[in-house]
Image 1 (cartoon, rainbow, N blue to C red):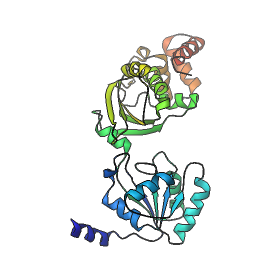
Image 2: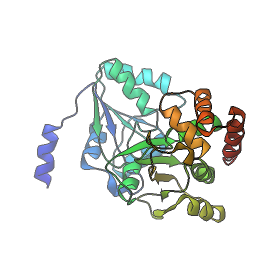
Image 3: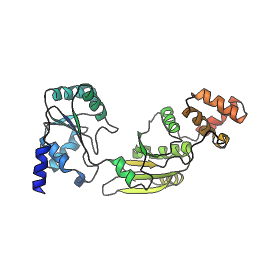
Image 4: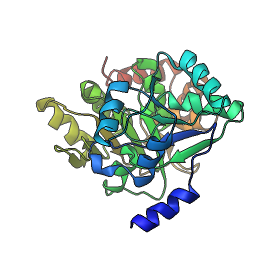
Length: 297
């Protein structure tokens, strides 16, 4: 094993002026890779979302490296600083709080900045909460989409959910514990009852994977306090309306979203639904408001 690692070290020497995206453990420290340890060891500088958390990881690995704070509220100024360092030939390793950087975190902006200035970017793969939850979900994995965090803005949140209402593939979301109940209720109100997997505290001591339905999940967490960070793996839509299908069997929201997916705006879609159903646009609007009230404030 030692000979193999030494051989790989020679082939994978870090290159000056390169940004390395280093995946770190999402819970269990044993999930870090040999390559990640070597990259952190040989980098000139480590850019971290939370320097205290990363310092603890480095101490665990017996490493001491210069740390630079890089997070959501300083990505512009620190991004320019890191860019300058890279242009000077510094080897920079970027890590997030846990897991793979540049997924739902400011690392995405740094990668884009490097791309614009022809700075090489090298991924050092490892643990990812989304994929860990997906492969243990028992839901289809052949095609899926990562939806990230839902917006806290009610309008943006609703638009996001309506846009995926008829997607047939598996979908993955991240959610914080204090927002979980609202998210489950909104899923159920706008997407109907379907299978969902709630994976929390992945790879940690209290890891839990719950396979259930949205209706049962809403009931469960009405009585149970959400704890830990969640990955939600949601079943895709079972029925996608076809042109020859009776659209009037859909709910008003589903019917309207069908036309929106065909390129209509909201008003045009409501007008088309009214024509399909032989009622006034006022009736469609009233029913639409009634259905949307099922969403939480």
